[in-house]
Image (cartoon, rainbow, N blue to C red; front, side, top):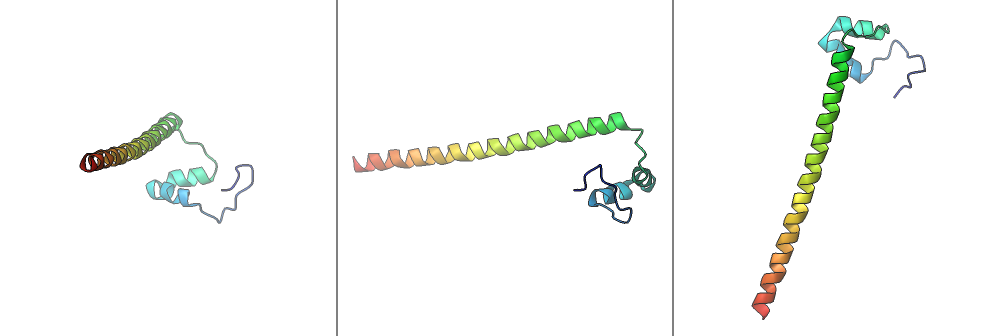
Length: 88
């Protein structure tokens, strides 16, 4: 990633800029010229929503892993229990 304090080569287009270009060529051009967007509030809200969604996805993944671990524990305990019954 290019640090923001270093000047950028205008001939290099970053991957993140391609989406901006495809969405709105004019906005992409303004962004390349250093103009700030008039939608700062909406962009900040969108960023917050994406961060919240990321936390939700992470939590869901962790809970799924916990569920699999508990399921495995129950299966092991049930196997041990039934093996003890059959050998007693």
